[in-house]
Amino acid sequence: MKKIDIEAVRLRLGSGYPSPFSDPVQARERRALGDAGGLSQFGVNLLTLPPGTWSSQRHWHSTEDEFVWILEGELTLITDAGEETLRPGDCAAFKAGEANGHHLVNRSEKPARALEIGTRDPDADRTVYSDIDMVAEPGENVFRRRDGTPYEG
Image (cartoon, rainbow, N blue to C red):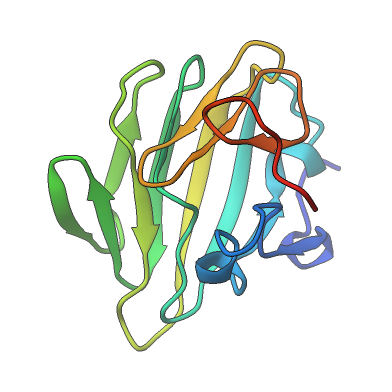
């Protein structure tokens, strides 16, 4: 059977960011639907953001495209160009290599859900966090400062 039982997919809370960068994403919920379906070339996450929660720190990827599609609720997309409100049916795309940091923030009083879709290139992709002194280098499972010093913990 190919149907994915969404409720059976492991719920991942928060992020692996070092403190204090993890604080605004602590309540973030993700279910890796693409992994559950055995996909290897791109990822699909079901993202749930309770009120006040961020999807991530503002970031951009060197080699990975990203796409988000809003399913429920209302989210604020924040990019270098400013803020836009996204509602069900709205979507946004982020081209690999464009140094335009982005993230979603739930400023409403209700939970919001979105699909996150992106290419996978973990051995080549560098993630740059626009507003903070943090990067994720290709092939590593550690966050670093821009000078290369790893964050502890």
